[in-house]
Length: 191
Image (cartoon, rainbow, N blue to C red; front, side, top):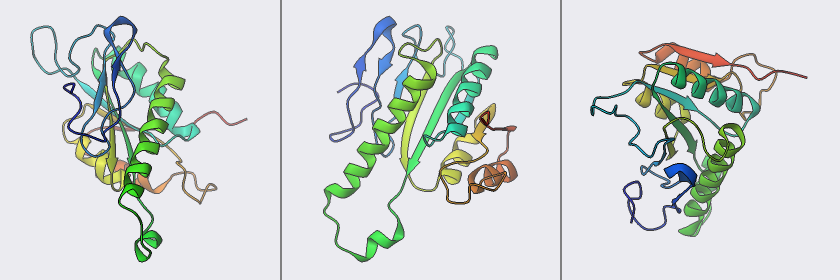
């Protein structure tokens, strides 16, 4: 088992070109990591912490724009990128019987979605160190926890929520109001 995997059922991670990792591991708290140089994200050559830019993604066009912006910002600042994708099962589901594997299926789908978005936006061999995390729970809560030690948090202005006419989504609004570091809200170009 690799250093970024923490037990069975957490997805697969394999080495990619240039020493980086491909895929996404962990659906609760086991992040996958990837680096351009094969080093450890979060540390300099001297072993000191590097600046970390946190970005929340959900597969939406605005979150892809946020991921692209966050990667550029992390490169400019000589830091690493922490990519966070959350999932949860709607409350309606709790009233009916769900097999134990139902949550694993949702988590696995989130892992695949995150891996696809990272590849789509950053390519197969990104020129930046990153940690990709798939977490169960509310997105704002996960992003605010990550913001505690971040240099910057980047979010899309709108996610996959149902009120697409709003200029600012609930997650981006919560993060902007409560984060202890600067927050950048990115909107994808509209056609």
